[in-house]
Length: 524
Image (cartoon, rainbow, N blue to C red):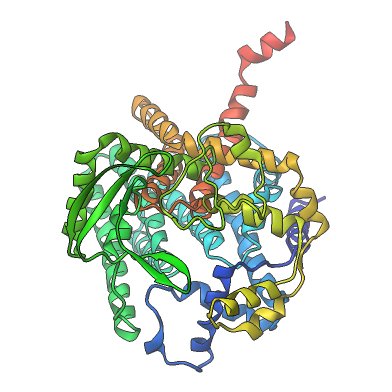
């Protein structure tokens, strides 16, 4: 069979594989449907909340242009899913070719399908109406573009300048799209481009390369800042920015006094003003110390607050960040009970790591720090879910969104493929990859930096591995510091380390198997 025909069959099979499971909605998904009014001219752009980017609502709107039911969204999501595979395969082939690793393309396709295709985390995240899978797609595209341009510069020292400007334009566009998918995603392009440029400057120690790299990074920042300013001018820019949540949100064991009562629920107010008590908590949420701090809502004031917390109790300060890190990795868990009001602070289950990692959550004990295994895998892949519960839940809490749109997504999930991928075998492997690869990404980054600097001939393999792992590290550190301890936010980092894992299998694994010494030992 011809290679072209094999590729066609491969991607057609992927499409059928993807379409076997319906799209799933979570409560957060419903909010995005409120923004479809803007694309249909029902509401003016001035009413758009700038905290919500336009990219994901636009993707949903494109789906509604095909059909108003689940099929339209499924088609759009499947396109993103297929292109994710296409560009991952292209990137791996680029690096393998440069490293002179002789391996059949068939093995690359098989490896990608095994690691990504039957990975229940990846499969389920691409079937839920949330932005995380789009962030994973941006990682794939930026890594492919940066890798291709780096190889082009390495192999052709007199490369054409217009290709440099094309790379600059593409990177600027990507960082804008990432920010307007969700603000926390803009570091995707920034980190990947930054570290690739550092590696290139190290490899080609010329002043002009440093200047080009600096211009590229500055252009990306200008494009980002400019687009944010423009978007803020045409939308509702009256919403305050919460510097406390961004800088001090990860202080798990430092609770600021200031709760608001509403409808019987207790909600924490992030916009602290004036003098407030700060309680330092132990593992059982008992007060072990307290102090008073005068908040004014400014960035500098919040930074001072963080350093004061460090001074007051360094042990609880770093324990909080470490617990956040381990919660994101999946080794720790956090019980979520119906009367438990804290989101960013609270109890952490550190014992029985394997149970924390492999037990899928139940409706009685929800673990919001691990939404992937309490929402995505059990409900998308295993259960039959009627989305009427979404409508009822939102109406019960007094929130009204476009319920008529949501009603087009009744009876979702429960496919044969989903039930197979939801089995403990696939789930255990995927959670093991999640926990191990994410947790050790800082160590792998340091290792590949060492290998890159040690080699006289700078290897694209080591630089690519370092870039992928430093991106995952930057993500998990950022979310640990800001207190965004929800594992689905880390999907982009997970995609990066999965690409790193596949690159290791295909490149280092093939070299090991082809080693003459190893072959001789087998023969003996």
